[in-house]
Amino acid sequence: MIRPVLAGVDGSAHSSVAADWAAREAARRGVQLRLIQASPLLPGAAVPPPAVDRLRRVGEQMLQRAVADLSERYPDLAVRSEQADDAPASALLAAARTAGILVVGTRGAGGFDGLVVGSVALRMAMAAPCPVVLVPQQGVGALGVGRPAARGAVQAVVGFDAHHPVSETLDFAFSAAEARGAHLRVVHAWALPADSVSSQTLTVTEEDRATWEDQEVLQLSDALRPWQEKYPRVTVRSDVMLLHPAEALLNTARGSELLVVGRRTDPQAVEGRLGPVAHAVLHHAGCPVAVVPHLG
Image (cartoon, rainbow, N blue to C red):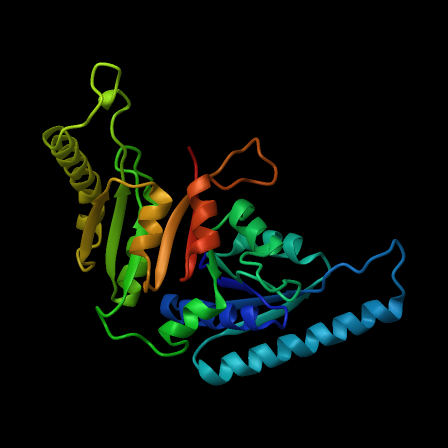
């Protein structure tokens, strides 16, 4: 089954930018774009029917405008729209079961000044069964929404642990770079061995540091080889950094078109969870961030 690109629409500027990003991604993949609008729950146990009807009419008009706008800009793109009766987060999670990728704005209509990542976007990143791309409003504008970048002029970045390679994350990053004609920077952050400093050895020599770094470079090169063979058209640059992973990724991703991180899924966690690196990246990256779920 060819899975569509899914995007949530709520009328906010953030969701409009995210919907445009989703449209371009669907066009790249040659798949359908599916837009979903779900009205926020109204307060109170009993909501008057006229209020519910008005919300649905407003939502329908919102969807019609979004479809018309995207169809005009991307005339060859198949766009499907629908309204959902559930709350936005529940509706998107349910629809994501049959989506290839879910795209949301980092904030929605209910956000406030200073809020970086809204509750719905954060829940999608934590719990969606498919890869989720969170699109910041300002980050995409700098890259030129709706204008294809020149081949080789952009880059994608992926965080990668060479000692525990995750195929889902790398496959997503390599295929995204290939589709965009982008260079791919693979960032492997490492730390000094736990026994490098002890009561007997209070300092780390440059020679020891260089030896450990060489080992990390070799480990990364070996771990990447299968994906470089699978995606020979992707130009790869490897970065081995003695930094905290989140800091390494954020520094490298400045000006990038996409930053890709993984999210370990936990069958025992009903709502899902984000690791500290993914959480930090989502709150501080200036470019779209893809969160790719994987087992183990």
